[in-house]
Length: 312
Image (cartoon, rainbow, N blue to C red; front, side, top):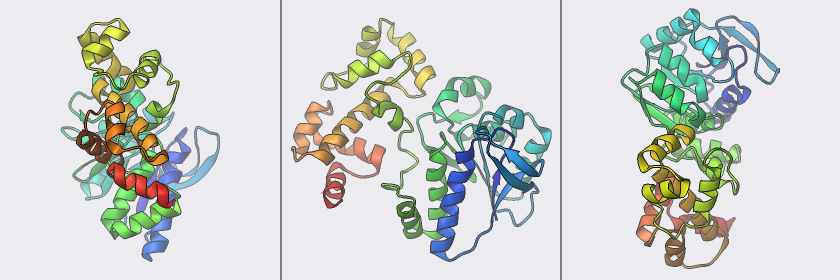
């Protein structure tokens, strides 16, 4: 049984996204694994949108093989609830695969399941999470992270990526890819892909470093080192690096790489320009550097993305 744990003011998509993925995978794999919505107080549970879902009582039984904890506005109260924490701990002790979506990571952290482990959460919570749980190895720039039987994922849609990875583990890659196609996802993203694609794809990103990122997008052919960026921001390199990570959850170098890959991806898919010229103009200097960056970000090299775009 797959259980989705919710609480008052949970984020609807944190639960509904994985539920949809597992539902489709069940049909494709023809393995009817039950999917249940759970809550420590059963009955109607109102999401942060005001829309309610009906949950059954959370009990750590042998039938429960996967438990996914949603995030949302009410997560702090859930993470402070002894009954919620006891249920999550009990499920883990029984050998259940435990995961979180978005800020649901706080529940796993408070339950002690992440101590000494790698984890991720939504980028907006990075600074607070690092300060609150120094014993946890936070990978702030990841879509999802697996450390043993404990999984965690970044904001909202990343819960679907996490579910697809679990589907791949349970039923194989073919079922996972077929599920992704049914969900109309371009491709199944690997956990190592940056969670900041949507943030950095924006032509006018918001936030303290919005002008800097907009400037960097127009000067990708330059080195754009931490020192270079700090000078542009009018800050010392050390202070800049700390402030940038605290606000975005990404290191400056990863943010610049992500900007470069997004700009290069658009040109790879939308033009017939030589890969070598795209790599140079996007600041990668040579095609091999760009190829490695594409595989980290998109799971495919530039040539594969170009072929896919042309066939589409």
